[in-house]
Image (tube, rainbow, N blue to C red):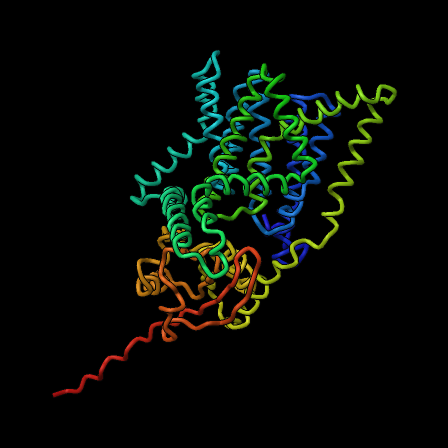
Length: 473
């Protein structure tokens, strides 16, 4: 879609940002109508307004990422699925399945919305269960049939590397968790200078590692929602637990929020990092709890302020919502992300004569942004994650040793590798001790709060030895 906006802006960055802004803005529409299925108009309006001004959505809606498109398709899928079950229109279940597939195409983690919806149809629907399941699965079955026909004709299996990525990430979780526990055990036996006075700190940290990850999830979720709205969400959750369990569709949304919360927690245990925008997959189904929270808040305020009319109470809530969100949104948006633009410009300047795509690989997510900025002058589209296309991930890309790593980079035709301090697997070898100048050249060093130190390596091409001339005998 960026190509549609390019003639207007004459700049690929702004064209892609326009796509994010468009989908981020459109998400508000189905979110409001989803709220209208559960709440009366004022509660649906104020809840939708809160989501429209939440920093986690506003900040990501101006980035060059696929999240806003995924939000729109997820919300459309939730709305059409809920509407079909409330009004018994099976065709909308088919439409919902299409929206969830489009959401998964943009953000693979969105696949769990389809899985949970399917489980809800199988376990909780009593009337015409089979027809509803078939209607919901019809788009997916069509895609599977198309893949099967493609395979039978071409004898080539479509690339499903993201499925492999899920398996590899699941394998990394226990390995990374055990690595941290082993390191804490070592520190408890041999504490660093100055820590001899607290011999039990590292041992207790090792025991409560799971609780530390939970604390990180709660803290980042509260930040993403803004602490005021997080409090409203908690009120809504407990209100739902005591009063609002009659509507089965609320179980459907609550289970989605719960599963996404578990996935976020497992992701933290694996990487010990959590970007606020990841909370969006939890925030969308948690919409129901925010609505119930405002419903309970309104009921309490009506009792405490009997002389106030309801419209005055709504206006007070509206003003409070603006007061707690507006100051954060008028600040400069992520000024430190300009470091990725600077790296991209540095690489582009070195490769200004190149007319084929510059392949850039990294273990963290910054490689995609740097790939985008580095290839703006290239007329041919570039692959933002060539290592994934080759079936590699953050654990398998470094290989067992340095030589494997270099051979892999050259095999998949990588021109630059982005090393990130916080993303390099700690159980792997030390890249800087193994690094050889004849293999890679250090282009420069940068720093970012999310990645730590960033080092850009230029992969040197292997010089082909000239064949010896053949002389006649």
